[in-house]
Amino acid sequence: MVAPHTQNVIMLEIEPSYLSRFPPKMTDQVVTEVSTKPACKVTDQSLTEEETKPACKVTDQGLNEEDIKAACKEGNPITKDYMMQQTMLRVKDPVKSLDFYTRILGLTLLQKIDFPSMHFTLYYLGYEDKKEVPQEVKERTAWTFSRRATIELTHNWGSEADERLLYHHGNTQPTGFGHIGIAVPDVYAACKLFEELGVTFVKKPDEGTMKGLAFIQDPDGYWIEILSPNNMVSLTSETKRPSSTQRGFLSIPSPAAPLHQQHAC
Image 1: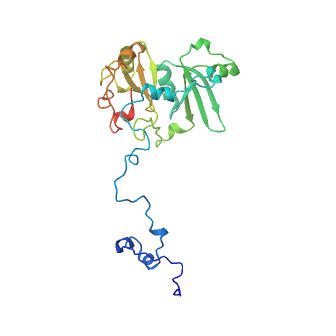
Image 2: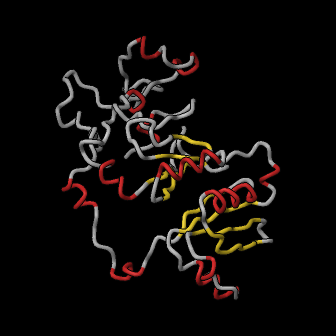
Image 3: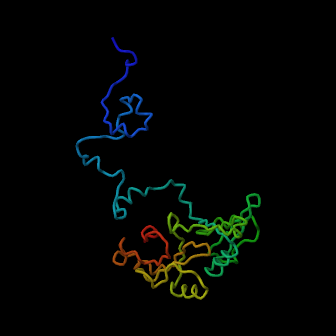
């Protein structure tokens, strides 16, 4: 005959050290078989080679040609008419930003679009001839959104008066967005002008390992790469490319993330 209060109870021998993990009140209760099961697999053998394999592919090198071929697939036929149209940057003070992108970088303001009910304005800029910008609003709108590689500056009204507001450029922790790039005929001539205009440099052309390449910052701190197409062949060649331990080609203001987390060429 089964004694009272012991029916359906699994009696286990529990090490005192295990019970000491629980609060005093819990140690007075019956510990069932379920509650004593370990959270992970416990064995007196070492892990097998299969069990020690990482969940993802880990390597200190980039993708090989086979990996790239497998990753890049043919798009749907309708994508043949797609294009890269805009990159959006939030800006704190539109006066400073418009001055920088037009007077210093030479872009043209293509269109301004206000959204009064949502209290923000969009400014679209691109390297277009001012004479070609349509004057009629509907035509201008369609034309603006048909231009390639434009910059969309987003101004949330009142942000210029907020002393606490600071947009993150993505090159310090937490890293994310990196930079936009502007191609110029002569990097050194462009940077000479930038210096005269008081532009902030992240890297000047002769600094670091990669010569003839520069990085500047806009009023909100976003990075802008200044490059010359003809120089990029030599800069990106295998013999000139810095290794992961040599990427000191940018002069980064402190504090900042490790260089390999900020920019990779």
